[in-house]
Length: 214
Image 1 (cartoon, rainbow, N blue to C red):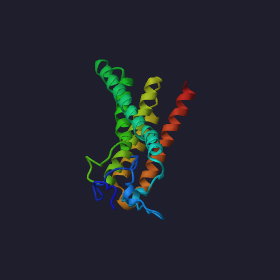
Image 2: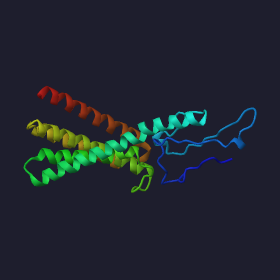
Image 3: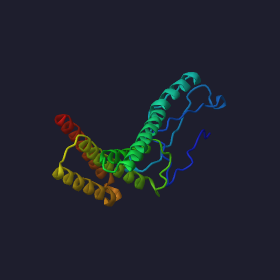
Image 4: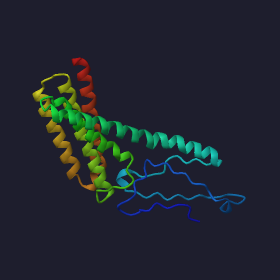
């Protein structure tokens, strides 16, 4: 007996990787002895699809667990997006009035790319992209641009002039963007891992440098 089915099991696939699900099993389907629940997971192999934790129990306890998981997996990210978007818009308006204060402009750009990156957690379809892998590439590219804008924002905020470092940052960012855009689908997992680790390294190095500067 079919209990539930995702609406899109072919490309463009539904994005359900961070969506908690709650189903109440009809009592008419349960009988004495062994009851078997089959779950079919559909995805692209490059993203190693699989099934998250499964909990079985009394409906009230399971609903309470669902609410807790929903808060962690969905609501917190919605709040993050709202706050980031509002602050980004505020700083953009300030920069429009005071163009010479570039710190505000870099913060607004940083907030924009952060919103585009973190929205990956909440989106339930790859739209406006044609398929899952295109959406994955775009998400990784948003992370690269967020990291670059974060570095420029902190340097401007700290009144630092680092022309050589900035040139190296943009060269590294352009290289990672080209890699993410042009890597064949078969090698995409390696490209995504390289891009993510590269961004993490730049981000952490910038944080340490700013602490040293301060």
